[in-house]
Length: 391
Ligand SMILES: [Zn+2]
Image (cartoon, rainbow, N blue to C red):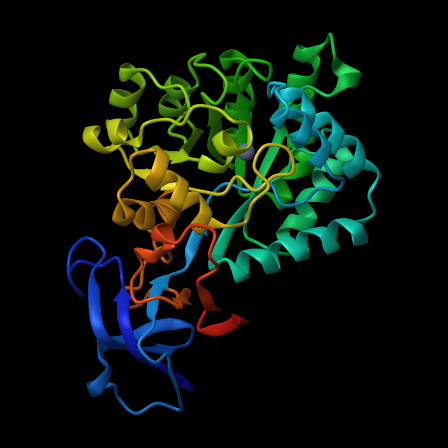
């Protein structure tokens, strides 16, 4: 049995209030011991037990790995021109997805793997240790299954999003497309997917269509989550709560009733600051959610159209600056909040027995993640106690 210690941690964030101060469970001058990829011991660095290998981080900060519960990682093509046009004043609609669909359908498996692999490496450099990945850039039976199969090579948190938009070949036949997604496409996708998701919004799928698709997914053994209230409030949050979705994501437009519903549910509110940033939209006010006691997650929404970032720290900085998060709330949302949005209890914190997924920050405190926007503070990233990125 090999045991590894990380010692001389200046500030250790555990997210476990029984292990340290406050909701973040912070300890100073700490050490952790990892055995079998899990946290086996936490205490003062000076008391660390004998281990097979020890790494000193010389006073730096160690935080739980970021859990990115909303990303779209398998695609081909480039939409930088669309971004530039939008920044010149054109408005965002759901239709730009079709550009990526055409490129993804014609891309080889090799090309899709290479693209995904580059993004996964970016995520490790950004301190993300678990990520979810949605399909939805193929929108036909064969290619939705193909892109999910590729996503599965990189993460267990795979999501079937055949209902991203109605593809152009079904332009006037949305209900036929809904039947395809809930039938043949779901059947082809389900061996490669854990979750099912629908973009339930103006210009995408309405509440009844979303209910049909999500219910079919649940009947097939997938777990539901939903894109809700990004462009307009058409009732997607109500549906999320009705179907016990693990998470309702975006929530740019929220009524007080939506917030009460979320507060009384097991659905996490996942906010995606990168999407508002990159579409120059108004930010939701997270203080309303926190005040009502709603569980909140932050995720990158990494995708080529509306949020092409893998930087969780950037999302946290925007959430703190423009959405009313405190730095503490932002870190919790990006770690334990993300884990809750994926219904995982083995990640999102560093309690004893949890996965040894963490990153080391070149900073004296986690606050620097939002205090120093745009500065890469990640010194190293570890998954299951193994070093996957070292600066
Ligand atoms: Zn999305």
